[in-house]
Amino acid sequence: MRRIAVLAAALILAAAQGAQAQPQHGLAMHGDLKYGPSFKHFDYVNPAAPKGGTVRLSALGTFDNLNPYVLKGTAAAGISLTFETLMEPSSDEAFSMYGLIAESAEMPADRSWVVFHLRPIARWHDGTPIEPADVIFSLETLKSKGHPFYRAYYKDVTKVEQTGPRSVRFSFAPGVNRELPLIIGNGLPILPRKYFEGRDFEQTTLEPIPASGPYRVAAVDPGRAISYVRVPDYWGRELPVNVGRHNFEEMRYEYYRDSNVAIEALKARQYDFRQENQAKTWATAYDIDQVKDGRMVKEEIRHEIPTGMQAFAFNLRRDKFKDRRVRQALGYAFDFEWTNKNLFFGQYARTRSFFSNSELASSGLPSKEELALLEPYRDKLPPEVFTKEYAPPLTDGSGNNREQLREARRLLEEAGWRVKDGKLAGPKGEPMTIEFLIAEQAFERIIAPVKQNLERLGIEATIRIVDTAQFQRRSDT
Image (cartoon, rainbow, N blue to C red; front, side, top):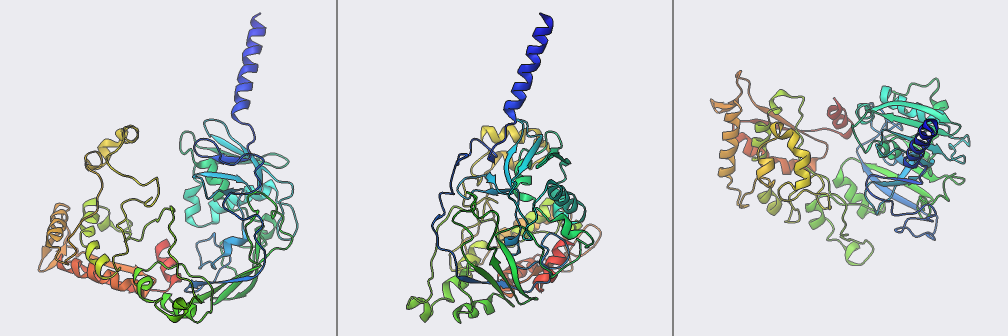
């Protein structure tokens, strides 16, 4: 009886574990997937969309690299069209993705690992099959030789191994990040292992990499233009995640020195579509005959996509910015209300969350559930996290922001910075200097009033305009 009981318990345990890790057609961060195993296409596509034609787009600056996964160089616009990941996210549900190179995935309830089962039909552009060895190579290469971002992105992946003819298992550090299966699913570009044999992955290249995506590089004019054409025998064209998508026969990117030049090129019909992100340009640059007579369509489209941020980012590798009070004080030098009225034509709303314009944006005081997450770190967090709803500094928009600058001065003094002979100096007498690094001249007028306010605080501020390649290098290092 005891043997039978032990055997029964073992079988029950095995069955329970198996139930937790059955192959699924997709992965979701929370709850169930919207689309079932037999879905034909995403709801937001037209499955009968016509194929063909060319779309011409614009990019700023220059490029010198067709490998977007390394630190060196500036990658060409649109190059991601040629690469693929194991899974494809859905645009009408949050944190959900479905099989692309992988036909299915399985993971236990604790998400301590995930196994991806590759599609037998998955192919590189040269017709050779995508194999588990390519997936393993991709992770190991990006962690060891890719952009430093990937080292941090995958740092909690403790092991990757082939577990079957077409299966790869990723194991994760315990109790760290429940999103890791999704990060691997859609955040790991799959690279052709054999192509990189005998090649230096870390070097820039203008030789197209034979990847597996719906497009391949057709022509390269280094630094000036690049075009992609649809792969006629693309292996994944009939997958549910691809039906109704990738409809243009050719996609071409033309490069321009800056946004002003790019706008004039649009007016001259040198390319077809522009997404405008500057309020002044939106308000003033398109009052032209082409818009009035319908040859050019100017349209504002409402959406619920998180807006991200357009902001000043502090370089925390500089000691002077490591004190939170210093960063907070410098924030008071930005008079958003005056800037919005005088420079942005009143079209902007202040960013109050990294997830603004979405249901994920923070609001009010922490909820009961949020407090449960915050409490263990109460002694490491600012007290106001628990007592005040976040709100950025507010002015009356008149340009007279003396009250805000007084608060900035108070915070700086509290952090050990004091004005001496008209200059703000730190505890060791070092002057406070700030360099604003930008890649577009259009931002200079936005920074100018901030610079003026900083100078009123005794801070020496400068604006440096560099090209996109220099901007990327300096941001990375």
